[in-house]
Length: 391
Ligand SMILES: Nc1ncnc2c1ncn2[C@@H]1O[C@H](COP(=O)(O)OP(=O)(O)O)[C@@H](O)[C@H]1O
Ligand SMILES: [Mg+2]
Image (cartoon, rainbow, N blue to C red; front, side, top):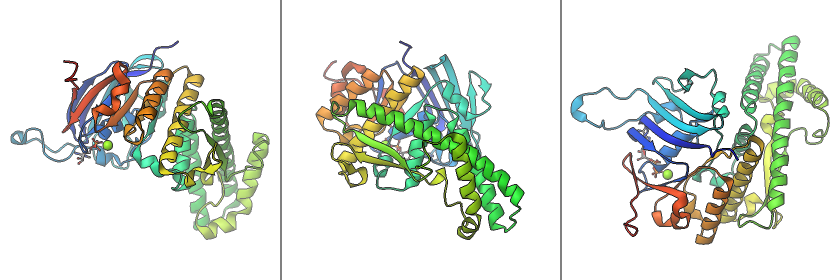
């Protein structure tokens, strides 16, 4: 079996409440404990920027730049204008150094990524080295919230097994924006629109097929565990785009979607947006044993369903790439009783991943035992937790 993908060193400069942090880790799970506001989630957010996108809070980069009091007020230093994150990891392609950050004034811009010292062409190259999945308290409302949030969640799952998915989605959005603009300006040059719609059809169908593939694999995997896990099995399916054509060939689906776009021009022009396409599909989740929509399940059941989906997907990533993803499980322990917590720790250990977990109280991680390395986070400082009882 391949070595466990894990972060060995993490250095943050000017990131959120961290002026300077240098953390050395081994391959075990990383537990971050500390009071509210200490910087536990900030540290995980930094790790989440080792994958394409804006990280697990989707914050503008300007928000990530450290503000507030300087470490040495007497030094008269300038306020920070950027942040940097550096990680050494045992990655999917062996030992790798990743650096990322922004220099400031780049709120809407992109962040720089260097891999083993060389600039990456796109952030997608990060996916050659590690895959990441996260579960945060902000995702608690996923099933009751907007379809857009569920699509984004799904697209993250797809991206972690299919690195080309992000680029396809981006190019699809770009073509769609151009089409919307042309329609809104009333410059309905048919040849131009045909071209954009052909692009949308090709990219959109590729996106939909990639999503379908992942949903179907994930669904089979969850099904194979149903009934044996403390986390309830979910049924997952996609809705809202070319469902009836889902079994047709790609070219038939492209033709159907292109046709749909062409005949919808007038309607879309009036609406000011494109009303049908994969950008409107939704991930429909049910509690399998109860045959109940996830949105109608209890808060605790929803959390447990989500944990089941993420762990199932992590297994899928491992089966497809040979390496388990790094998991970021923010405030995970708070929602689970002792038995479920122990089961979760056993599951992540069996996955052979490095999981980062946070909690206010170290006692929540007792059943993790020596499978974890425990740190205390306070005021942007991270120190190994010393177990008083063991001393
Ligand atoms: N850009 C920033 N500069 C300095 N501090 C920040 C910045 N962004 C957030 N913070 C601080 O980080 C703290 C929150 O840290 P967080 O990691 O969410 O805490 P927790 O340990 O509860 O997860 C807050 O006190 C907030 O004021
Ligand atoms: Mg937090």
